[in-house]
Length: 261
Image (tube, rainbow, N blue to C red):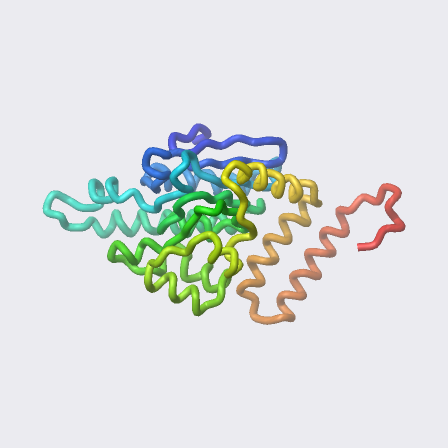
């Protein structure tokens, strides 16, 4: 599955650029797109050439509008309007494992967001490591607005870790929209940039990362993810100590012996 139907992937040196490519559906998550995303992220675990991924969507309306409800109605419900629970559950698990794969890959993910990031699109954005947005960007836990729960595809894990828990409760329980200024004020996004500068800003950030020690970059992402759930300070420090020793072993001193960290 090197050629995708719903994704565009290209590399620019050590940087990979992944684009959701269903602009006519605001990049809604079809079953095919979910399978292709699962394949893509898992393939990056074994890709030593690419050091950073920039993740965005095609078109002008938004990054991702969440689950493709038209397809869901066609495939998950039968002629008697009864749900195929087994199919629904398998689809749910596949998307959830896709979010997990985003955290497991060694490459930091810079998400360039514009317009809507709804439901599953919100979760994809939360699964990235860094989020840049345009002024009109917005997010919501759309799942709860369509009769499901607001805790879906990692939202109840990520959001209370990225913003104050009280506000996370609010957005997950109400499904209300979070606009770009609010997302920035709460610390969900790193910066707000004009639409015409979004990709340049994302690529520039990715290029700065790609110039770092590749092992250091990988171990930093690993340490942050592990220490989000660390049992305590001692465990976090032990992991950081190990990582720094491994990175130190890879440093080549070329006339830099006078420099200090």
